Image 1 (tube, one colour):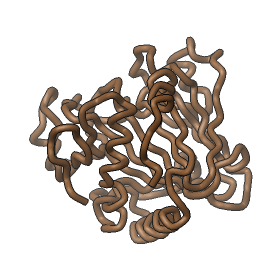
Image 2: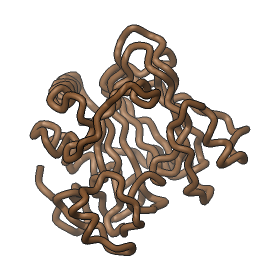
Image 3: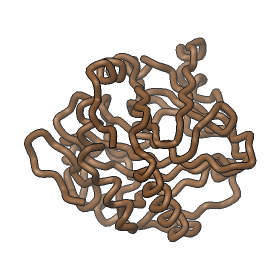
Image 4: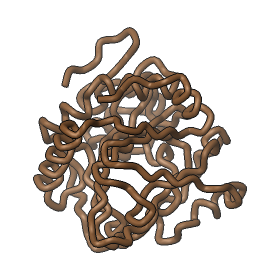
Length: 270
């Protein structure tokens, strides 16, 4: 794994809120990731969450991508990939924090002729509010302008806003909530299989439609900086855990949000 970051990459991330890392995975690693992701997604069948009853349907959203969350929970191979301390170290260095916990992973597969992914923010969905939240997006197939590569609005994460539109049928609904962003220039991020990107949880991003008869597979993981607190939103946390939380409580349960890298603390082993 090409996990050593350059100073230039760290500076670019801190300036733009996004950086593409070419060649993260070598050919053998890429095949392992593809195998584990395909197995884990197939094992889930139509269930989206590891510990939940939410299922895929026939909605517009379900035709944006096949989405399966927290594959690390119920597939040992995915656990070994997602709890890799090298990924945690990269996220920690880019975000400029002391340590990183998994918030949730998710496979995002644009099936043939899939709908576009509307502009949105990530962190406002989650149970913590942080300007340093970060996600990795690993291309398992070439992500092109034709099959649904990502687009970003570089630098916008530095503007203080946790307002979100969600992923709707209208590509531009986020700009109804944040009209000041509507005239910004978007940056496309095509990637080769094995490349990855990291982006800030408050950076607007979206993806085009898949205008091809092939799939565009990606594996992602959202990371929570160590030391974040509960903001009252449920998101992916289990009901039994939520019932024992109150707003302001520290989110440090390694069963649900494992610490995968920290500068001074002992991380959870894969």
